[in-house]
Image 1 (cartoon, one colour):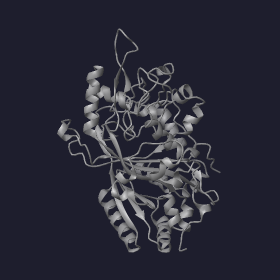
Image 2: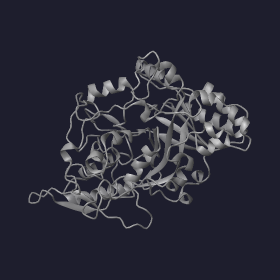
Image 3: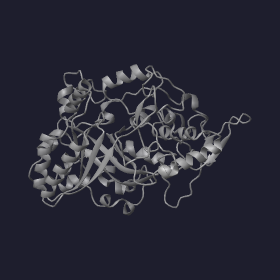
Image 4: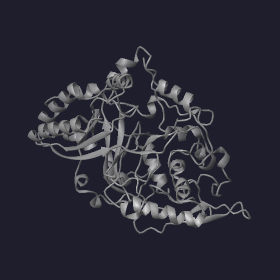
Length: 482
């Protein structure tokens, strides 16, 4: 029997049956180059839609076990990857399908029940998203479901999207589609061609590892004496209500637009202030250099491995004092504090911090025909960004991270100088709020504690999204006319 309080070992005889009952992409990303996200709104007649979902689950859905076998085939054949599919429901979607209340996932604090539009109706982990009336049109209405389709062959994906949208239209299902495509940049040897996000930094380095084989590979290539990348399955999976040994996962979807021109201008201004080069300033904002190397000194065992074996133990000043190497407001330090919670937050612990990690599975969207051109005219202000997705067993795992990014006092308490400022890349200021600038480490030979203040925020705009749940495969297969 597979135990949720441990990583899963694919060599375990019980693993194939367990994986066949969960959807793929949750405990490990699908890895495809192109995605289509079909957002659905069901008609009043639930029966035909339920039947379609059951057929989709039987014929097209990618289970965890199928994903494992596809990965093995990809490695043996050197690609391309096979088509991939997920199916996810919102709380409104469960109700629209007339699912009994006792079978609907019940997120402990109520974020799933409230939905992303009403996130702040839950009296905890408040975030500064724009009002839903300002979201893109498709997201302003109720979203009942999302079909995630992915493929390495774009034409084949286009054909799949057209077929499914056509089938759903005949059932009266309304839909709109978001498209994602991996963005890559060649950093030269030894790192080479890497996945990046639109601000130009390597993306997707430090996800938790819940598969024994992946943990062993990371330890071998990256090292693990300073950071343990492992996590139990129950970081991601939770028991499905009413299902015997059935598991699913909560998913966050957020369309995040990136203002590349503003980010670039800000890093240049910060560089001038701190007497650094622009990429050095951006590294302080993100916590990593563009090729993924963290600003905290580290090394890898394999020269081309993604560097991830580090923590902030040597950059942990007294409470209320800015960090000197990696700022507390840097993107990766705020989202994965690696010991800061136990050091600085009252009653905080390493165990709580590790339980609040998420399994991030985002992909970039928007064309960048002038990716290698750094002139201002070539840097987009709109139309490009990240289709953010994360899987977690409890939506608070996401909520606490976004709330922390939008809080200019975290992880400190008290008046200035005991503050760290908004997270400097994805932090959002509340409408009309007075936001303090962040303290940035300044290399002054006459004053080792010198800082310079500069305000970094609002480079990322949330355009819409939803809280969803990836049901078990048996649940989806069981759906039929009411």
